[in-house]
Image (cartoon, one colour):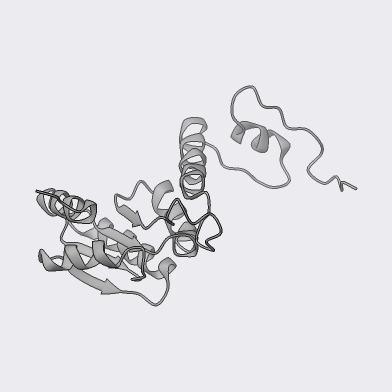
Length: 162
């Protein structure tokens, strides 16, 4: 019996209790979104991915379940970053599902370093939590405290570089 990946993921999420999905449907996430709806999940369509992740953030803060954000690959994922960064820093629980450009399509406008993009958000949150980081632009000591161990702040905050 062959099971499509999107079906297996939808089954797993449903079994884990996912009942709420926010998103913007596109070719890269349509089947996943539809599969979750077919299992009974409630889907709220947003006009913009930033709105979808912000709705999921609010939902997660007041509900007893973890929501899913379903977005298209490439630009769909990049549009979530502002809201996703806030959610990550606030330790809000959610699952973000994004399509991926086909490996064979090396010239796709949707091909970006999605893994690196999301990892960058995670690194910022982990660094701030580890160091208690609050950086003020004009205080070098605060900026230094936010850098990873072993990395030194070079330059003066007010310096203009040629």
